[in-house]
Image (cartoon, rainbow, N blue to C red; front, side, top):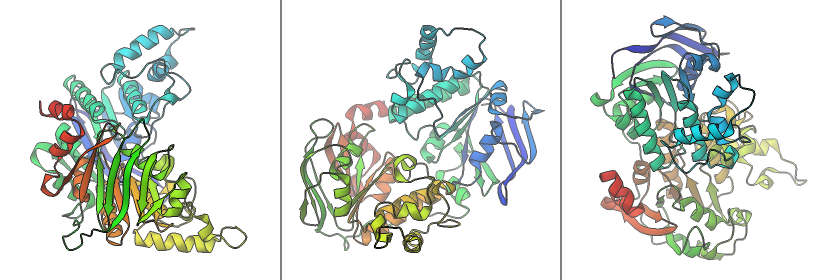
Length: 507
């Protein structure tokens, strides 16, 4: 990293009607540095990045690139200036190949009449080889998993002759192996003088891979730190504007421990993805599910709830053995699942907050003729919203108008509307800021203490250790072990998740 400033943002403002998204923001990026941008959802990070990328125009202020004022009128102009942007929301064309997506910008400016698909696929394979060897460039993007689509987005940005590369939550959908490959590439690019703006809610990534970190709060520049000179708590406190002493609530005490079984699963298996799964969930505890992505964590939970195909074995809820055939049977019994894909499966973005909350049990807010009673629907949403400290202008507003943390609260409220006895939460704080994470963790503990059985699946080991009373580790579709108390460490969990992965990490 040098002291040579390649990009400087000076006194930039942006308003959307009465909402002031940016209030005189200052930011500088040096050539060859990896500079983290941190802030809660709604702090102004996305607005600022969209201005740098030409998607939005500032109301006032100045952007200097290599010391010269520039006006970036569009993403195309941003690319021409050497600015690449990998968005958190995947924006690929699903009906064309991986290779065509990767080289779409190049193809659009080409004057060739015919496309050489063989050459396109060869070049795409070369770029992808640094990230993964598991993606065929000839495959349609729509046939790829979310994590592989994210890798294609990153590969697409690498084809541009970037001087500035913006990465917005790039590891959110990646496996640990894929994320490590990305970090290697990031450092290689920085060594070549490319400046990287790295947006992430994950403190461990910021402190392991970034040189500096700047914090935005309420649309204002708060501070810029050299990462080597501060700790995660300094950044977190700057983000939330107060001292956040406790990211995780107190765990279950000895006096609160109970032998009462809320859920008992015995010999569950589907013959392919998971086998011989047996565990129990006790009243008042939060049980964590750990494991590498692809280990079968989500598949096991979906098998319990009958969300994804049939499974053998027995499921006993509050002493009663269930005979489930469909997810609707699971809901009726009081067992619900919150998907890791909040925007795809967790909430209906274009529907109102009230309609989302009532979606699992519309009959509860309908009159005798099956017509929804809007007053009852609003009362239900209002009651649950207050319980979860939901922040919204109106229950009639679409869920898309909310921050990520409040969208997740709506998804949890939807689960609570059916008075569940067990809730499975898959990556419950993915894509939400640190303040919202702490609040969601508190909500989960309050639910557990109220008697709701809680099972949390998370790829963030600090979260899993911080929020869970016990952790079951899944490896290759089987439970490889359990950790509790002082044994609940990242090293022990990784050892149980994959001995090979541990050897790789400690090598």
